[in-house]
Image 1 (cartoon, rainbow, N blue to C red):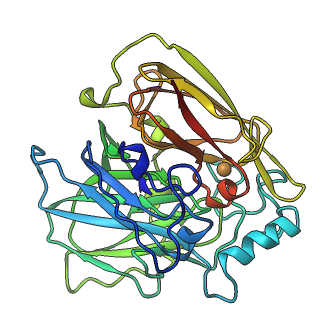
Image 2: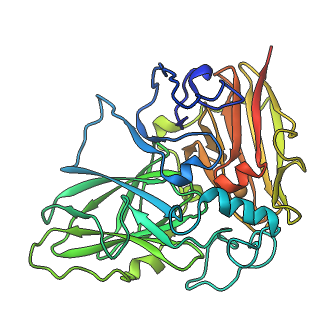
Image 3: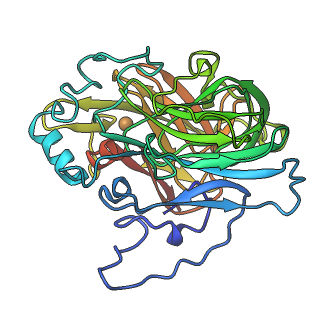
Length: 384
Ligand SMILES: [Cu+2]
């Protein structure tokens, strides 16, 4: 699946919706045009395979982008449990057998917040206590080093490829300017930290200071962090694996705080149809629901080509859900960012608008992979 790309429906890579699964040993050629520049990623849409590391970053370059930066870094965040004595599939089986309590000692989406080191902006912040959080595939005691020179301007493309973890990202000693959300330009926003949900991407620019600095991805509401080192001075002492830069608790922006830059705005139009989507869950058997049903029993969201469609997410749980629509980018209402994945906070109601301009059957789901696998999925379904 080519996450975030508004491609032709039969290349979307969703078994059971747009194609048959690719059998072991078999092949399938994906052939599509990428219509919009930006930071994307790709991953299987099959079971929990993404939580075993099967993903990559997909950058669509804009030949007209002025590129006012000296370097470009790609920073991929992940939560990791595979091979540590269990597997993602065993984790899900345990969650189902224990009504959600098997991952963290309490289904935080239904029960309570549990104890966390810093106050979480997202309430129940995950179902799984991962043993490791990674930046570019490395744990903090053996981090990747990103090198530059003082004064250089760097564009950092940040991707959250995790399955059950939102990350609070900050670079010690620096402020970041957020320039893009999910590939699309936003009105530049200066911040100390940003909060990135699973499936979201943010591009930021920073002007490098002199020294060695921790680039920290703190697991929101959990215990642990990923870290890389940003180094512009060979002599500077490396930050410790437990570095907690003050920026983490400064100004923190979410995708819902950003405003679309002019070229990213969805043209104003009256809404033709509104779909309500109640985000729910049940402790019994670890079920997650849309409008009270679990996929494949969920009702499709019916649209027609040419319609302006409003999706009204109503989160009825104490867990956040990063909601993702395939084949389209939606606009947060009131001039908010253009996105394909958006965090809906506990008990929050959030509306997004999209233009129905890409016919087909499109998966629409929570990008917590365990929630999606446990039923929090439906289709945006074009009718003739
Ligand atoms: Cu969810």
